[in-house]
Length: 320
Image 1 (cartoon, rainbow, N blue to C red):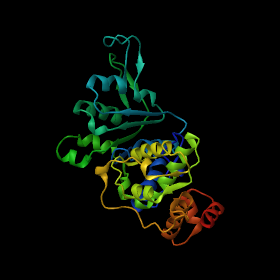
Image 2: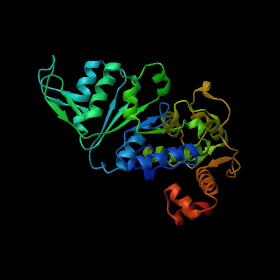
Image 3: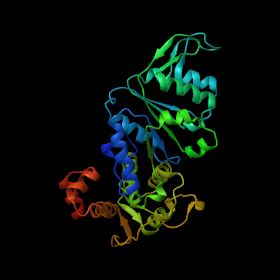
Image 4: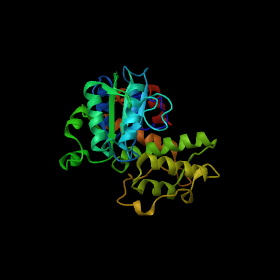
């Protein structure tokens, strides 16, 4: 899964050499062809929102709204107003009628992030709307109806919450038509090199710079790191490193990491370096392509499809 930049991305823009991540993307593709409610699990920063958006963009609802709502740390009154809207005069300061997230998402997708953070009352209100597709705006007794495909996400261990009665079982069964689990970055060593290369390319393009590689020390630092903040942290670290690089090669002093997050190295042995000891970005990309090809038994057609590139582009990357 190498693209976490564009809100217009579809599942065709995502790929992974990690078996668990590849399975997640396979299930996401199946989910996109249905209207099943989806539950996305994964640590903070793994890209749950972007995956939800990609599923929506790959579904029959793509031309309809994608509406996002974060359920964390909201009072029950705010949850009511945010999700279901309110009528003019419903409470102090309600100067006009406002549509809620369910109503705004009619015909499209409603993404509720951090659903496990919601209070029991908030969970009960969502359950009713999900079960019957009906709700009332705050301050109104008139039933509103919305056709919404629900995608939910949380970084919490939801099954443990169920066992501890911290999350409603009936709501869990309603939102869990299909569960997708995004692996943390530290468990995806096969993806790390291509992700670093892609992020450097994106950051350099935005900043108007030409970055051709990493110093050996900078590469070792990046590939030994555990990435507790996952893709969100990777994006921040790479953007900062590019900004702090005056030349074309990122040096170790430009890589600012959390020193407490180093552990068992997750990198594979680097045996492709340029003559001056730099890990060349093209070499990193070529290694990733070869990993995918080897994992598919040398089948170039399947490898090209998995990577989201043409057969001729695959050959060119292998020969470069």
